[in-house]
Length: 120
Image (cartoon, rainbow, N blue to C red; front, side, top):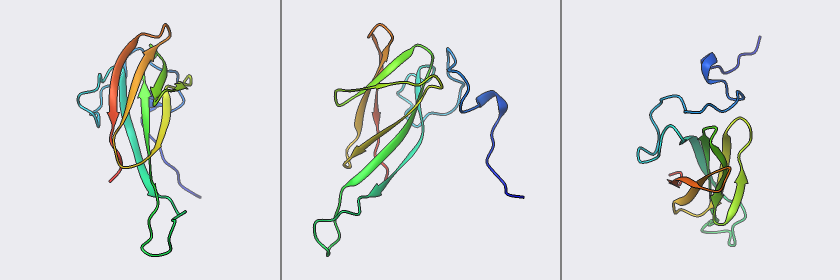
């Protein structure tokens, strides 16, 4: 028998978004925890280097952002990312600098802004 992952039943990854996110330590303490938080991420060096040695490429980051039921979409570098019904989005970007993400309601009002830190 093969094993798998699991978690508490009250925090099902595909459950509908709650009005207030469950309390859990956030990677960004300055973020409005009941509205938005990060749940992980990572990065990788792009394999398409311009030269063979020394090997250089772009650093590509990603972060999983979870939002509550008030949030309609995220804005990253002018790109509007619609939030799916389960409230989790993956934000990806190239470079080693933090990425600013605006969190907007259904009527376009900004609830919060979070700086996503690159993977190190």
